[in-house]
Length: 548
Image (cartoon, rainbow, N blue to C red; front, top):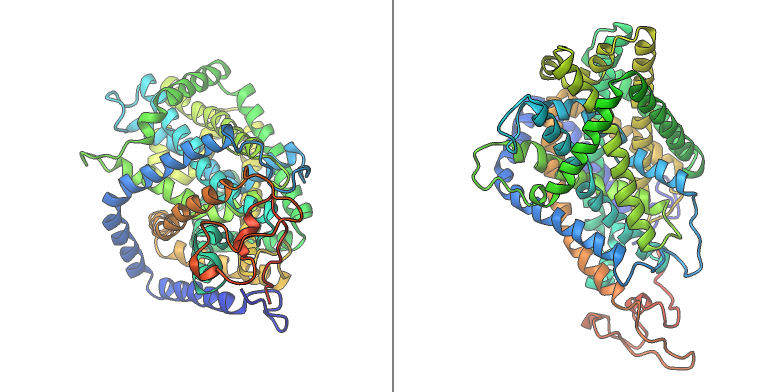
């Protein structure tokens, strides 16, 4: 990978940067110029892919969950993501705050009320809609789409990148995980292609999240400040958020991103405590506990559900969308989690990234979704109609229905602030990840490119909103995720091949290195040791190729 030393692309891979910028701006231009045709085209692609994705995504995500559990509990659990004596860079609290804020903060704010209410009305796993029993099922289905399965995707990408980067000193990019399979070919066109796919997935994943968050902020501004929603307002809010996000990301992970994430976390705790105290406390605790049990009991069934009878579109509308969203986000969130996870063992990492965000998610959806379900079931508040009318306003309607006077208005305003800060956190983490990929894994990519990609993300999100809103965003992210899912499969093979060398017997210091490891590709054989010999941590350190 050639890194430019001069000009505006100094510190970046010039060819990859130009190609990525051109392709994304081309997408912006086409979608902006032909918004209706673009929306129809994206929806047609989604409809065409759905029958395939209903089983393909199911198998892939099921395998990743089982694989991550095995890594966290198996023979490699004590392998450290860094040197054998290296300690974590961030405290546990800072680490969890950042990975949750960048991971699902915005999405879970959007869906925490709307999804349980929608599943409460209709799902293929209950015969009695809109009953207390249906409420439990609706909550557990929401846990399923935001729980262990999704975080297995994020944790796999993050673990793989952290392992190759911090333990073997390879660039913090997706291509590094493919060295065990393709050897030095990864330094050329093949690696460029893989990283560009990662950039595409990241860009469309972030654009989808920003679009959903901006819609919800618009609804909040209407409920709290009586500001009439409009397309102009959406675009203005999005632009303001991206400006703040860009300023934050330029300041670096240890400053802007870390402080924002911790602030988000504490504000989230305040909101949760408010609901627990002023909401239906006993019901919230009870429904969360029971729905959690229902989720645990049915996780295997849900994980392998493929809608083989095709008697409903539930699978494509929900599971296919969510797994596609998680996969599209995985290069972005995975790299960010990898960046903040140096020094942890694989066991610590898997337990932290799989369990902690899942537990937070269960509490969050349990309190928000549980409050909405209680209002519908026992208070006669027609929150179902509010959700069906406008998903993005569901959260604020739920808070208004609590009827706690000025406190409710204050909490609604805080929710607008929380949505904005989560959007900023996701956006600045996303621009950092994109520029890290395009700068050969540099943890401090050039500030000018972080600003440039902030502008590009703003443009893409704006045109996707113009092209049709939620449905277009969903179709775009599902389409963008598919090619990257193939890369994930190759990454699994690469990680396994490298981990298999962790326990090989140590060579003595005077022993000559073999010309190659048994699994090195034929074209890598030469007079000098190959780049792949580096994967054995017990052998002499080798010099890696320079990134010019």
